[in-house]
Length: 407
Ligand SMILES: [Zn+2]
Image 1 (spheres, rainbow, N blue to C red):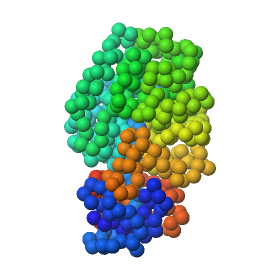
Image 2 (tube, protein in one colour):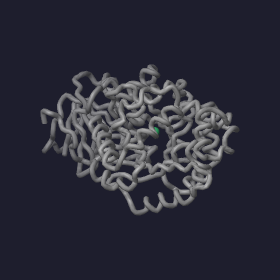
Image 3 (cartoon, helix red, strand yellow):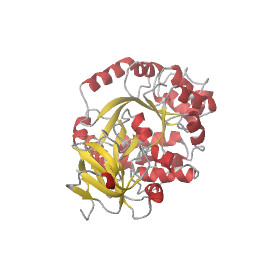
Image 4 (cartoon, rainbow, N blue to C red):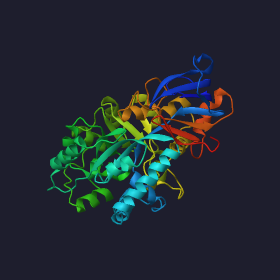
């Protein structure tokens, strides 16, 4: 299949005016300028569009999609935790399935083709994987709080499950949920595997206070839930994670809203990827995100949506275009190439899919999309970042999953 477009934006090389992408099966085999195409038979002219790679969302909870608007921005992070625990109590298998699939459909419609998702129902996962074309990295959530529970067994069970279950497009990792909802031996058992990991880290001021001071609302709540708190009161959540082995290549830290210079140095030295979720950050009204310091330290910075349970707008959808705009509002001087890498090449690397997704290049999966554009090439990146609403067309694994009305 030969696709021609007004502008091709491969991400891993500069935009190409009047460009083409050649797809064979589920892979891209050629990218370049239309004038250089040797064999033009069976070409599809996509017209006045930008053709770009499908976006890569490094952090989401698809099963919270139907919680959109359910929790007004709370006074504190602990209040939010209490609210989400209450909401989840009423979710049975059918509701979980429905919400997860609503989220997957939203991602696809908005041009996301690869997703790192936190999974709480492995029993339902195989059927959910089969019900979406998305390329998924599913992180199995592990929450072990009580002192007498067997963390090593919980990790061994997850590893066993992973050995016999694989999504049709993607792979499975572990998500020790956060420093505050895990015990140190759980973190150590996760770190001893060679699996990808995703962990909420330094998300809230209350988590920071719990670990650095050994006080505060989150500390009290978890002490009340039976967590041993003797690992609190001395150092930051990031130092805690480092002490118990989870800061390593192949780890995605989620949020990182409360980081001091030492934390940033630790993330960089240990090659931890970090996912910033701009709209979730705004919902909670966190301290300013330290994007410049993280980039300067060399941290692989990605943007993610988080879930719709942490959005101010009651009609929000899972769109990385909305996260791009929100991040740009907070960092207006950020160059567009760097910004777009946060939803393409950087999360591809974080999810263990470098060279497979997040760019248009030879031997990369044919995951791509179009957005309408009839302007000059120098405004193409600007047009991508300013795009609102669904993508015009989306191809995943060489197959059109979202079509243009005019096709
Ligand atoms: Zn999250």
